[in-house]
Image 1: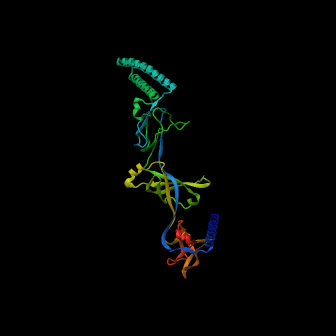
Image 2: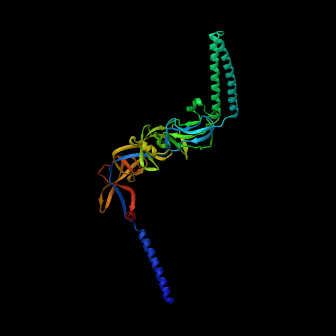
Length: 379
């Protein structure tokens, strides 16, 4: 039994040894090489770049109150469309005590003065009727009465403005009614009912009640690398693709290139802006679909040639400042023969490259890279 076990183990070791030897021998054998061949074609070549950025409204306005107080009522919500002058919110005024006291004092003094002037006017009128006072003195007395009444009305209005933020005489133009200064869509209302708000003054910017923008006039804002900015011109067309709306693509026109670079991740970037063109037949629906801040990509054609002779860039061999291709010259048995030929190249889009000189459309070229039989079978 032990004898048979030893024979089996010896046979297994021998098989492993022989198999390893055969494997190594096959690997050491030279393999037949195959070259990938290409036929030159007439194509359009475009050199493009993709710029990442976002969609923004051209005009985005922060609506702020003209007085300080507390939000009493919100009449609109984000997403609502408003016309210029529409009321967005109402503010309840919290009067300053010193101003309120001064305004009340002014009303009391105006009332005292008016009563005195009314008494003087009644006396003067009686004497005028008895021909004891001249017409000129009577007219002066009547003028003083009118002035006293105006002063009383002005004092009452001032008190109402300090106390309530609005007077009866100017209720339609009340500063307690926060109105939109432009027509557009409300993007945000960062306050709630009960929040305190302050008006803009020398010491602060004031509280933003709402942000309103015209979503029918949009721009694309992005950054381009300094290596490509020199190839841009104002007015150049662009294609805008919205990340959240892959089925929609918009035309745009470059209208601004920043004169100053900003550094980002060690590279100099220049800000650009492009006017987004909304189709006129569906501008209303498109403006309702697009939202401020959407991420977007802009495709810009930096250079273009049409119907030129091209080959795949993988068929080009670069050597210093020179470029070469391997032209198929004929057959040597089952194998093709090649000739290394210098060519002049032009524009490349990263896949195909323009051939200006050194190659004709009826010639075939091969790739400089060698493809083995195994790789051919895998492909």
